[in-house]
Image (cartoon, rainbow, N blue to C red; front, side):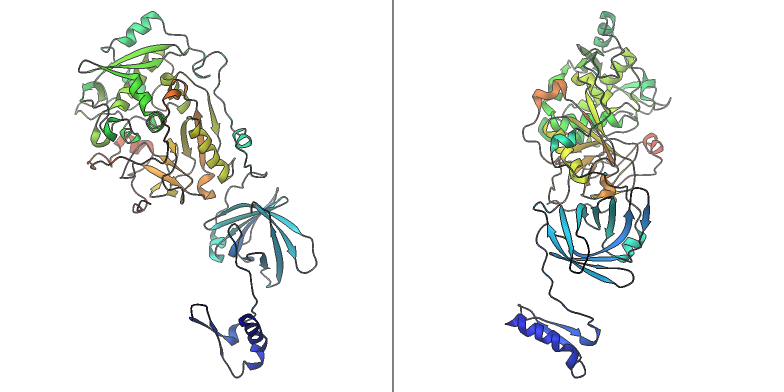
Length: 506
């Protein structure tokens, strides 16, 4: 009855406009909404949107075809209300469509109430501030306001295909395999020989130091200085990603690999490091042909004359298992002459410890947002050493910003209701320990690439309770927000800190 009275009021509105200037509507909670009748152009009942259906105002910013891209500046508006959509063109002409959504809500048919052909739209993306619809060969990018559409920078197109929901099909899109048919260590190490007896003996002597030049940090770091080593200073005596904080050496991929070990395989780290005496450490590794070897190092670390250390450390400059493994890798590289530590790749940093160099890449912009999240889940469930990067800097992800030319450890997020996954910067700053939270935004997702490496000898040690990474509690020290001058120069930045104030945990 109330609905009929309301319709009657609308019908009569034009007749009584000269007598009444406002229309009062009483809502279910007895509140009153009042409108100026003379400013109401039209009124109609619209269905409310159900979960998965589009809703609200969206302004056309870009129209993309196979051979052209047109900027529309927001002068065309599409209004969604449940199963009804109204298209308002720049001229003011309107077309009303009834929508028929697919069961999975990933597409809908738009049926015009006037004459015209039915059009099927695939919902390529629907995230905060961006809606992407595709019909045939045409893709349209919409924004939440006319101003946003007018100012929007064109986002790299989504893949020119339907989005996959089958993990097998998504995983088939990987590329750049490092597999070798002659060495389990991967194609990079395939051309190098197995360790000779002389090399094994050299590696086993802790007095034999690595070549400092392999660190590529300049001549000031020219000596090996004894430091106190606490293998596992945090997390109740267990390895944690927070133990990995990069300083002067440009080995971010190695640091990201070590943090991935600590995240997925903390017991593996403990299994390969043995302390002997007060200052000697035996690290189980593999030679370039995948044969087990021991690399023995002492507690002397690469330093300047003033004692400043170039190597990775934990919070409050606690030298730990990651420092020892970094030195062992530097000694390994010195022995086998396979390359330097500075700039070492992910697929080259992991095999000396795991004996497995099989890896694959995921290129930026090749996957839909959901597919990229599926790859993360697939890789972590299968225990792959997961490292990623960004091809665009300055994007805010949670509280921190992206950095280009840099490696990040890929992890599950501890806030799955807000984010798709996490990526930890090995600089490890702030109480979030360098963790960037990756939201379901194309402007972020299409900048990400992955390198995923098989775990090899680490596989039996996989954590069964792998979830979102929660940094351990620690007292912030003066060096926990510090990047060395060498690192700042390498990335051409003055400093790196929170992009916004840290958020409360869920």
